[in-house]
Length: 116
Length: 116
Image (cartoon, rainbow over the protein chains, first blue to last red):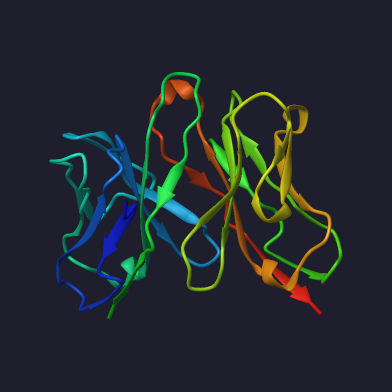
């Protein structure tokens, strides 16, 4: 298994450009999520999905769109990039083994995005 | 509001000394609790997790954490720190089971520096 993969690893955008950060997992996990990491702020949840076709907003969703057409993929779209979106982006997936049972989040390696 | 607090932004310890990193949460019920470590330029690695049961949890790399319900705390400890432990440490929670979100709320992180 490759686990959670993210592409690209690095990206530089100009203000106003759009792009899609790719995230894929091959573990058949139901749950996927996107976080951004900024110095001194930890990781903050952007969007999450509890299954194919179901997405919802996290703490900092503005400026980002997501969709989940398959279990494997959960792309994050930046509609019109702004310098405030300069960050490191992490995708994660997890499973649910049933109510009351444990689970674990698996993180991708991250995408470092710079918006100039 | 639900939150996770790591009160120490930066900690320096000598190699071989003991370590305790603090984490407090504010939720009505006990959430799932996690500690992650991130080395510079790297992704996140899970150190340990708590769901229920024994309040002292053992993790990888010689780390342990103790859940104290009365203090809403989940502090990370290591009896003897190695130079390779220098990294940033994040406490994270997943709200109680009934939210079904399976996404994490992170503290702002504690950067650990180890002196020779």
